[in-house]
Image (cartoon, rainbow, N blue to C red; front, side, top):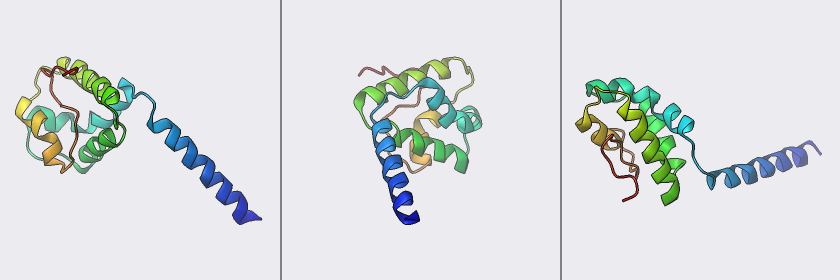
Length: 113
């Protein structure tokens, strides 16, 4: 009986997760994913494992074009508040983390293109 209850809970959690993946991503989520990257974005060098985990989470949470455009705009807005962003480090962040992501990390990107 206990195993049936556990199976039901897992099934419900899986359905809930699947429903959430199609929802819009908000800027607070995007910022939370990328906050560990601020030092790298300002100074270059090597991103931390926490930063790369955030980039990976950003990629996983933006499967649709609309979600990527929303995330891009959030990144662009946040980056405009940080005057010392190294644009080279920003554009190299996904590769430095070995994550293929279709969300540009830059303050100068056209997010609708």
